[in-house]
Amino acid sequence: MGWKEQRNVVGLMRFLLIIILAAYGTTSPANGEGAQRNAYATMMYMGTPRDYEFYVAIRVMLRSLGRLNVEADRVVIASSDVPLRWVQALEQEDGAKVVRVENLNNPYKDQPNFDRRFKLTLNKLYAWSLVDYDRVIMLDADNLFLQKTDELFQCGQFCAVFINPCIFHTGLFVLQPSEVVFKDMVHELEIVRNNPDGADQGFIGSYFSDLLDQPMFHLPPNGTKLHGTYRLPLGYQMDATYYYLRLRWSVPCGPNSVITFPGAPWLKPWYWWAWPVLPLGISWHEQRRQTLGYAAEMPAVLIQCVIYLGIIAMTRLARPNFSKLCYRRSEKNTSLIQIGIKILAIWSILASYVVPFFIIPHTVHPLLGWSLYLFGSFALCSIAINAFLLPLLPVIVPWLGILGSLLVMAFPWYPDGVVRALSVFGYAFCAAPVVWVAMVKVMACLQVSIEREAFFPKLGESSPPPGFNKLY
Image 1 (cartoon, rainbow, N blue to C red):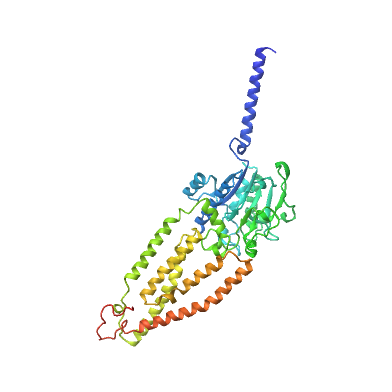
Image 2: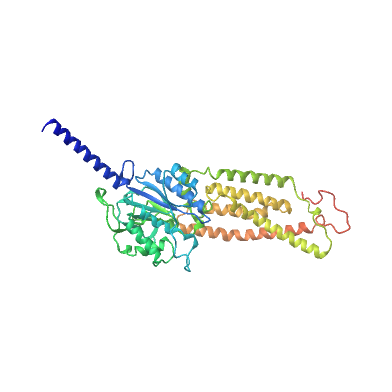
């Protein structure tokens, strides 16, 4: 073969190689240079009172996956009305890939047992449209990862955990994206497929109704991928309630990798009041402390601390003079005034314990949240104490009772959850009479104060000298 023929052959081989590489790159974008074949995905939508809390929870979960060095992309399926600043934070600060979607219509929203907070959870079906990936692990925001679960990418077309004996949980499941399956699911929505709860849980459970009869997932050798549907061991989605029974994990099957927190939405682990009511809440916050931090909530916390300090200082320096406000004109008026003052005093004390709870940022660390609550309730109680000339100890008995209950619940050496529950109930049983006696004492002291002549001078009598009505 001559030199020219060799050069032509080499040129032809280079041309064919370029065509092959180009075709390879265009047919599988996710497998190109720097791309991952698999993904951890979650969803975000707007329209609930807890949008911000779930946004924080998603960020913590994404960052915890990053700390575990998972070998997969982290994807957020975000509805088009998610604020742009949130999307930018997820992409630029948390390293996530955000896929913007339109909300899927929920045809079940008018059925009798439908919970309105699940109206947009069917957006989870968009996970099947992520066809750039071979496998996707779809997650709810309330998952706490103890270790990475990349081996689940070797599971089949659909895999999920049965934390209920008969119904698998959709807080974590593995799927193989497919446009065919996604379009079929959308079609099933249009014809209103049977859905017991009207949410993603009922729809996906109905769509894969035979999962209970499928084999258990066992990690295949040599990195091969399974085909078909499989049940996942419970250790991939451990219900937090299993922990509360023994105050330790006793799940023998699976790697004990992921904790989920189903149940009451107001006891999700990111709320500061969830701990020590639910002991695992502190584990979630420890993960947040190591990843996202609490810088977003600190300005509101500092402002509240300054306000409470100002309240305590002002109530100590200025005590109101009731004699300037109330004068006895008739016995009937006096009775009405006394009743009004009693009601006002009781509501003031009650507000002192309620108001601080609602104005604390919901996602602060529990230790900071409870400290701020106790500080705020004490500050507001000082208003009632000084305004109505009440004794300090009876008014703050509920404050001491709340502090005691927190210490009882946070005690770390209970042998199991039953003993812990009995201890909490026993403490409440013993504390209730003390609180009742304190309230009776408050009412008695209030009655004595408002009946003093210094508070209600009789008509025609000279007013008492300034400062006479103060109790020293």
